[in-house]
Image 1 (tube, rainbow, N blue to C red):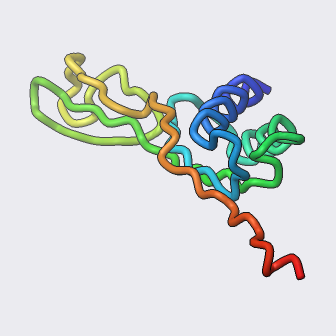
Image 2: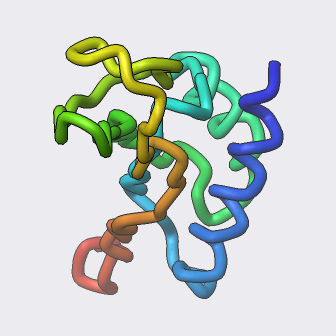
Length: 119
């Protein structure tokens, strides 16, 4: 399960941003070219976060497609696979962009109980 290595990096980024505050939710943008399984990544994150400020935090994942453009016919498309040739003209001059990112977009913190809440 290669998701474990990714979730360790995500957890480190969440912990740096949290600076000791309890984390309720983290939103991560993930490029589809990483070929990550959403359920496996969420389970690995839950295990890795156990005992940390991100324990029980929800990991929201937004998967981003790869985009490409053919230099010959200017056809543009997106998806989860990298084409070897343009599906429109058969050209091999394809420029790729995106689909390979992993970005921690946001961290939502749990509200700490106030003294009046504890009565």
